[in-house]
Length: 265
Image (tube, rainbow, N blue to C red; front, side):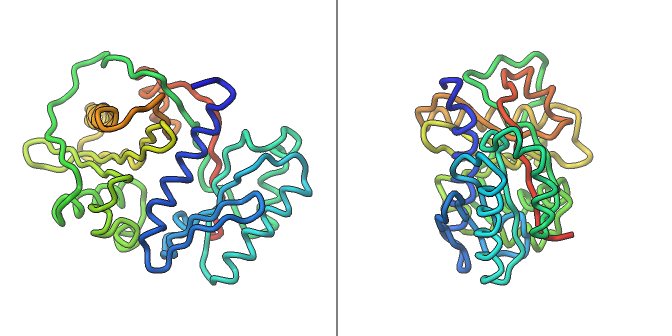
């Protein structure tokens, strides 16, 4: 991917991952506002009632207008929400005042994640454990996907289940995976392909199986499968600070930061 468009690929794929989920929800909505894209599932978990920047923000007046537009939309729909911001949309002078400005609209920073990109995935530098990889297509695999995700991301199971219901098995654009070891679910991941880019999401590992290579093994398997099904120029993901070094060994490098603000204290 050309250097100048890398952050756009990251931002576009992230936004599309929410749109895929929102389009099939009874209370979901996908709406374009001036400079802001809304992809809201209309669920209890406010992180999935999301707004995204869709155009550059050059000054504080523009930032205030975008925040006001999104805030009014979600207030009218009476749901809590979140704002996912790829910082490269923001002029440097705006970035320094972002958190203070978001607080004026009841939004507080909840996540600060490095956004990563890889043109090619490097071979594994260690021996990875054997896994049985299954696509989420049954109630059993769906429940395993939910259980690991809700535990790892510290989200109530009922909230996570509302986001990832049985319809996810029919969403070919959003593919969910579970890795098993000797029949025990150990790790999850999901992939979304859009505009020639593969996005990796929901990478999580059951507490008793962390630091053993299961997440890396599943992530590699999910990317390989997505590449078999789609032509892609590269892979993107958002990482925790703890997972950054692992992804860098796989060939990823930081291209931006993704900041998430949400309206729930």
